[in-house]
Length: 446
Image 1 (tube, helix red, strand yellow):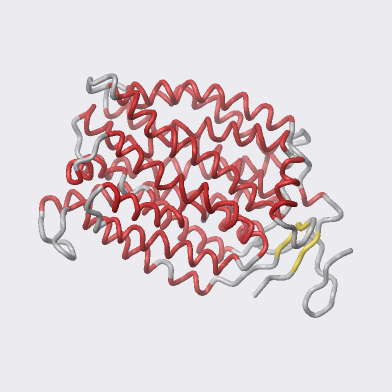
Image 2: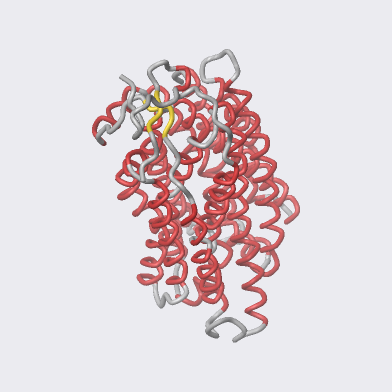
């Protein structure tokens, strides 16, 4: 039986045409840009943070990974259930405020513990916000246009990662050469976090203008967490391999995001001021190119008359970018940059296609929990396991190339494993929800 709107009239069917709300998508793009900028801000500054706080590589691995893993593992599922059953716009405001406050707090950290706590607060927002964004985005455009809509959000995400290096590195270089020119006269890496944190706080304000959209493609309204998890278990033939493929394939990108600054300092003799701008351009360029290819490829994949066709671009991108996992052992900085560009372009295509597949193949009331579950496992491996693992492996090779070699081995091996996962995910993929005659729309919640 179809649910009715507040006025008592039957809602439009899930397949009813609705124009794409680009103003909402642009605002979501700005929000993910802010989240990823503050999330990756410490990466180009690790060596300075390490020296100032007297940390080890093991400590850095824990700070870079566990501070994101803990809030993601503990809060993702409860927050995802709230995304699927409450007002998403209010929740997004709370999460964005967390990553702004956490980033400002990082500037005042005095040791491992206080730095960890500040990053933990930031991780609550950044680690749990993506399902909120995808859930809102899926309800402001038609299924066959979600790949192209996610294109902009994906560019915003990679723009944020790029800005973390470009802004972080450039600001660090300027403040290092001009001591005392920041707001409070602190050391350069602290001033960078303070200034960027204040900027992130200002970007929370536009979210108060975002209105909650109606929910489309709903199979069952008001399901419990238990019911949602049971429904996901029935799709284990698809979600299991997809999760496995995405998390193994993401190891190389995760290692790059966390450790590339340290590799450039140790292996190539660069400083954050030297590499901040060009690394930012590489990340931004790969994000734009990968998002464009991935967005249109995902939409094209939905039209293929084959099971799991939407995932075919992810399978192809994984195969083509396996060699790029060795970016960290290139003999020159130029080679490092080009191979990194290839790796990140492929990773952008894969991530966008995977997110689009969830938005198309999973019912509305289960999307956020699906994304949260994938986020937990992915964060556990990429942030909780990979950073300290690479730091531990590199500790057995004290040479200047030890860290780079550890990253390269991990990246290439996991790339082959990911390829197998995507193949099985395609074979187990369900039919798109929009083709289900029982799917419906429910009104927006105030």
